[in-house]
Length: 528
Ligand code: ADP
Ligand code: ZN
Image (cartoon, rainbow, N blue to C red; front, side):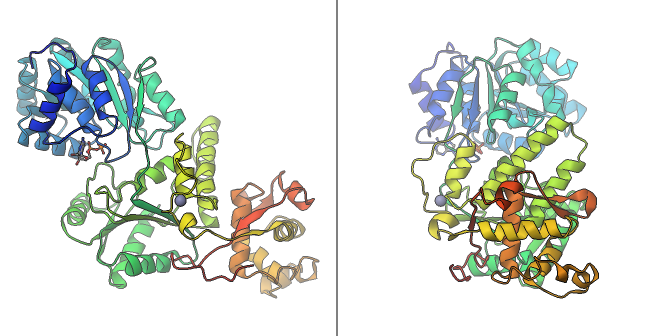
């Protein structure tokens, strides 16, 4: 601990062996450790399970003074400190769970130079008292974990992170290392700006999780599809099922239990004790499925999660990546499975429209949603698309471990079908939702059709060549590509966008993916 702060590979390796019990560095770890130990700032982008902790823990041991780690999650801090203490590292934590006496003792240890690593909650660090204390201590580095929480446009913004810009202002000469597992370009820029990392290098590890198989299926009966997916392919295995609302979490958990699958609910509306019990059971028992809102998962380090399912569309590719990333941290084959349909796009759009955010915020949110919808609709490799979103060039064009690679979807020329559907929406006055439009296209004499005289229209019954399911898929793809939109102000009536004109005039050719059975089995629909 008394060596000068110049990186010696041999020192680093010996600490790596003796303290962490690891045979060697992984990926960019060595470069990062060297850079930080030599006093440099940096931003580290590494997927979950990539080994970020070592990037600041090791330099904290190699440099004089104590490493200060900012982390948003009390449970995560506790676990890390426990692990470090076991390895003989002098680590402590400062957060709201400590009593006054305990906190005083930690502060005394820090000032006496008795600590190697100190984990501090962000809201605590920014207090004048804590900053003054840090000013009197010898500090090896500042590590800002989960740095994307600083980004206001990110999916996981935490207001208490904003204040962390004070670190660069107050301690400009102490190295700062920001780490995150999710950062698209915009988020990255915000981290750099807020944490004062303009001239700092970015270390970007590959975000690929090769053991995760990606599958996105057409949503028909989500709960039935989910049950089939779990019983057919993951019977008795641990998994996470994400739903958007608390009610749907409860419903889905109940339905799974009824189908003989052990499932526990988890959402912010549950009693705190029950939530904790369910989480503990998921972590400690075998084969528990947790059905949860996005409130669940951050900081949960269960290595053998075999599948992550989405019954609702997340908000962005970052959110999808982070949530699916909780599968397969042990490196064994795992599934990321999502059921997705027209109502998902409509619902997410409405949530954006009805949010109180600024126009800019809404614009960004819509672009992020569109990118995810693009991933859901693509007929090409999902992994290539996913990694491309994070700016990563894929090595091949086909990964061989996603649904589109394993069972290439059939594509058909849907230009005429699209024209029929758009005409139908137009001729019925752009006042009706998906169900009614399908009735008119197929030529069903429902009460509503008769009531509005839609059986007299030229578009009545012009769509007999496709099934209801196929029409819904066409509709979804037209919404996904921005030719149709569901107007929340008039009961989700489907209306034409300006771009629809090109389709109606036959200037735009549309290739659609043909939907398959939806449970991940072989396609059932006949080819065209
Ligand atoms: P992250 O914070 O990026 O999600 P962690 O730092 O928790 O990842 O590390 C994930 C796992 O990888 C841990 O079990 C850790 O012990 C292991 N690990 C980290 N670095 C190495 C390495 N160089 N060699 C082998 N295992 C490593
Ligand atoms: Zn693929």
